[in-house]
Length: 150
Image 1: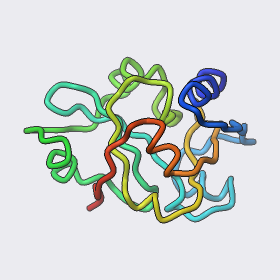
Image 2: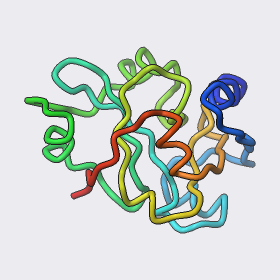
Image 3: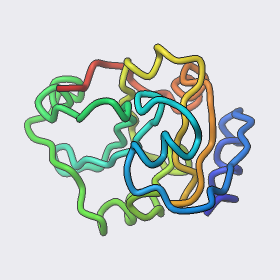
Image 4: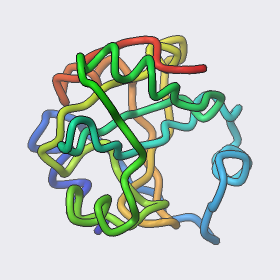
């Protein structure tokens, strides 16, 4: 999976180094501790199903996604968190390792992540992460930047 992420990033014009951690990071707090940053710099790549279509939401680890705000951004009637099977089908990644690149989903990007020079994102599995400039990630993915937190 790490190769998929590196290749996808390279195709998008991003030069990233996917780092393998000593142990899996199951929570934002564990990921932040593992890389030595505050939780807000952890970019959670979450899949939602909006009006029946999967979309990627890249959210700050300091926030929870407000589904009503997400619906406003996407101009949809309803949205819900995707099931683990839906996540894998839409991205090819398992829950806990979903990268913000390497899929063809529409991306909504939490504006709070732009407060940081760099952010950390999952690298394709629960043990891999990479650091990236959030502005470069937005540009590379064609993401819609919006406030999506509660």
